[in-house]
Image 1 (tube, rainbow, N blue to C red):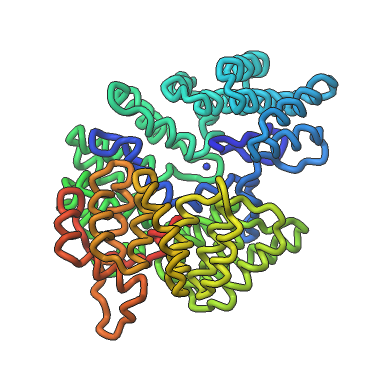
Image 2: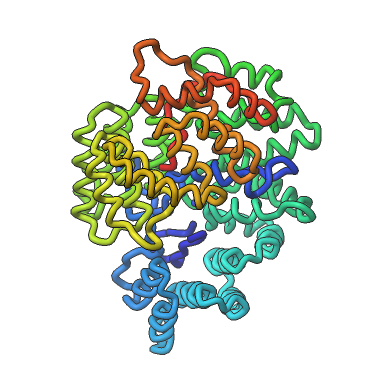
Length: 524
């Protein structure tokens, strides 16, 4: 969900690439896959070093003074039960005992339920009426969120641009995911509106509800816009703030940013240790903040994994888990999954498997995407049988392209040819919608020629180009002579080094060795 508002009186759960003629909305689907962990729901900030964490899919805070029907309505929205949500919130409103802040929340829930039922006009009317009755940051953000939910992205952009300077702080109620949805949709004839919005957000220091800095994805859009205006020095100056590994990778390799590559600021990043130092700078800056949200902790852990310091990610995760126990609250699946990944990358496969299995046992109704992520952890930790068993429980709508890809890889490793071939056949039928999953399935089954062709197609399509460009960097390191030729990293390295792939990459990017691990390319 783009926006998970909870009225200002309760803990804030309000929502957390690069459009030009070459970087449209679809071109950045890959980057949001890469940065998925930083989309965790913004939770109440907690004093460092006491990390807070809660399930990423929740849209409400469990506050004892709230009408329980509102909380049930929010849960129903999470589960797509919009009719139930509408009934529950209607009953709470009808009783007439809601506070102003609960009435704000009820208004949003009503509008969100109506939008889910396909009643876009009614949803917007509800949000507008509540904002008119009680204008504040929460009701304004609710209005923008409903405009986005109903597909009125240009209207949402105008609503943001129309904010008075003294009220611009309200924009931080909106998550970066929602902002990106708005900005990314304004291509073609709406480019001028998009550029105005980017400028206002960056120069107004938009940071979202869970951070203290402009998101790197938004800043990279701003840099791209400056380059189109031939403002090279201004663009180079903006690069000094970027600290996210995936965004640094794009800045250094995607040809959209080629004019910057000869600039001293960017050339300096190619010196030994410079990129890792830049990422570490961002990690340390976050850890020094007096308060950190669970999104901050997850981002820090992920950044440490990406730069090869999984042991430090584990240490932070253990601290977060201990803090959750002391405060008698659930640690949340997002944090525990991050712990499992860090264990796997640290080489402690037994700990990764144990964490994944405990999460499955203790959480009774995990979303399909989380269960797929657990299967990925099990596969990475060498438990192909466990991964395949879990994937087998996911049928119908839950059998997504990611599930099919994982099934292909696990079945291949176990020598279950029939099961593997059936999954890859189903995945090939979804090739246009899920090119990245098909590509990885082809790599893990050793079909190098087909994988090279699939990567070439990904590069040609704006919607998958970003993921393809990142993939081409992360495996550019030379293979070791004694490497296991069945190892996924070895296969990927050999594939990227092939003349066919290098030729396919050339129009869109350059391939260079980057000091980031394969964690950077994984959708987790």
